[in-house]
Length: 289
Image: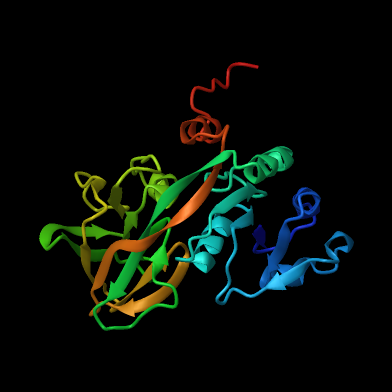
């Protein structure tokens, strides 16, 4: 079995996480590698003397471990792309919807995975293309694709179509297209519905809409979306899971479901609804001690 550890920015308290991961995998004779950019940050750790780096080019593995927060999970998913490698998210960050395995669970969860006691959730991915033919370095997003204004004052005018059927002319600070995975991220913070991970839907919703009657819209994930944006500055910003760049408002955006999914490893005793209750403190009463 071959497992690759991914991370973004190393912090001192990661040592206890990494050492636990390394010890359990070494005890089970697992081939363990570390993605090179993260390896360069931890290569001087004595307990990793026998670990080798691996480059994110034409690599393969039986499993990936993402160590950090949800942002690290998104970065890991971007690097894995359509390679069909399941990802386990270990939470060394804050909220942790994607990376929800805690430090105290690491050994038990990894042992269960090695004993094949887990399940895999298929997470839908968005794919974007542009009318000018330009292709972003990574035109995919696991959480959301966001159209956002570039300046600090004037709103955007965004015309949206679903399957060539005109939906609305949004006047707002931006527009999100979110997956079920992304429904607990940016989308939730601007009032979008929460979708279960296995929902076959996307959400279209404005950011700070000028009209209070415009509401989030849930559509089937087999739909194709087209956006035409006008801004006072002539440019606007596109963000794919936080990877941002500018484009001209002469450029149309096309969004649809990608040809692959991200496979999220879920420990046997974890559930999406339990995670919601825990992370969002549903049912908690601050008056109780």
